[in-house]
Image (cartoon, rainbow, N blue to C red):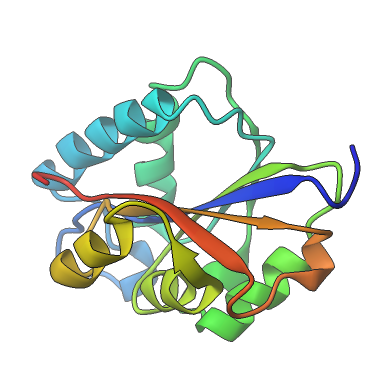
Length: 172
């Protein structure tokens, strides 16, 4: 693959978590979160994006979200559970994505707010259709995802280089 080819990043916020007496990192999904994670998986499968790689936070709620969502996919991509995605800022997430091998064209990142929303906003120098307006109106609720494209090698990913192609949130 030429490194100048278009790449897609899907930024996927974990589904709704419960609040039991555990550390934040160990919080599981709530019942609503389990339903929304599966629905988000169906919506992601409907995009027909052939994911090469999934980068998932090590937090319990992100791992559970991913397990329920990927069950809906026709093909399971290679998954890396990455500690640096937990509580990461947009800049820290860009640093993780900059390390992606160039043979990966389509990457799914399963993480947390405010980092995931912030990354979707700062990467998207432009947008197609009404995706930016919908994302601005809805914010980035649990189980939402944004699809961003850019061209070039992963190490060149930086603010403003992408196009927001799509946005989805539960009950949208």
